[in-house]
Amino acid sequence: MLYIREIYGHEMDADGVCHHSNYFKIAEEALFKKIPAATLKENNMTFVVSKATATYIHPLYQGDKAFVEVATIKSTAVRISLQFSLKNESSKDIAHLDYEIVAVDQTTKTPMPMPTAIRNLLTKRES
Image (tube, rainbow, N blue to C red; front, side, top):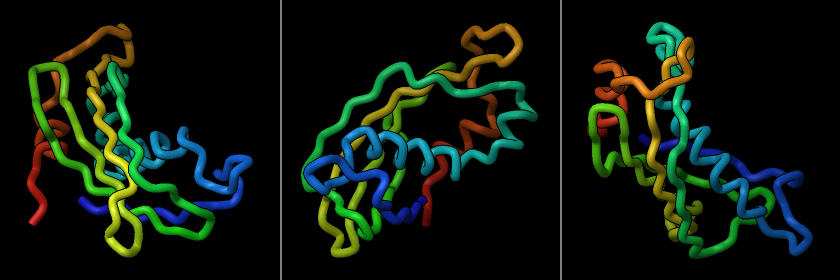
């Protein structure tokens, strides 16, 4: 899935580049674009990020567009490992973010098996 997002002025740091924390925010936006809120609500669940790492390659600036692709790396009953690849308009690599997400029951606040519908959305190969 490709998610496209413009970088705004309020996301800049003192050096005039996109603050590193916003790379994580953009990745999560791409994730939740792929999984509609209604689907989470139907399954009485949410996600918890249990692990997140980032490799920064090139900065983003105000007005740039970030192109985000999401790929599933590994899947277990409760966890899914995802990789987010961010590129700019010239297809230059910006960053790679690796996330491990856990399905959590909204009522009990405990890990739960990843619902099949959500697992299918996250592991579906885009054509």
